[in-house]
Length: 101
Image 1 (cartoon, rainbow, N blue to C red):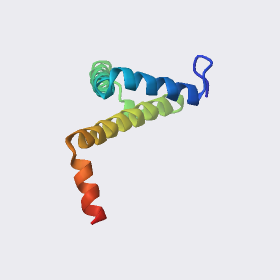
Image 2: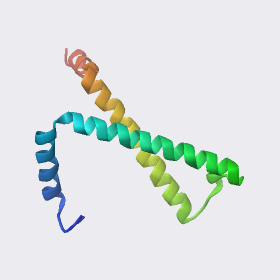
Image 3: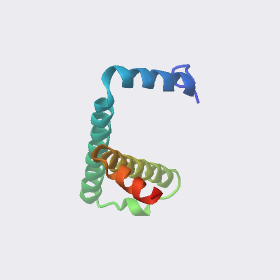
């Protein structure tokens, strides 16, 4: 996988440098904005679906694959935000400690 001629190791180094410079709050804000954007897109698709009288649940072929990828991405962002919230509030640490005991 190459993005702008850089491989995964180079991108990870750049992300680490950005994290050190801007801190973890940047990633929290980006994650929240990404989730909000996904939610807004989902609402827009639903309202457009209703206005056009089209049911996206009955699409097939390439459109179905694209829709599934978008839905999977939204689910992964939602899961990431939930995990991030647990880590920030310390709930994940308490659960891990109780499992180790």
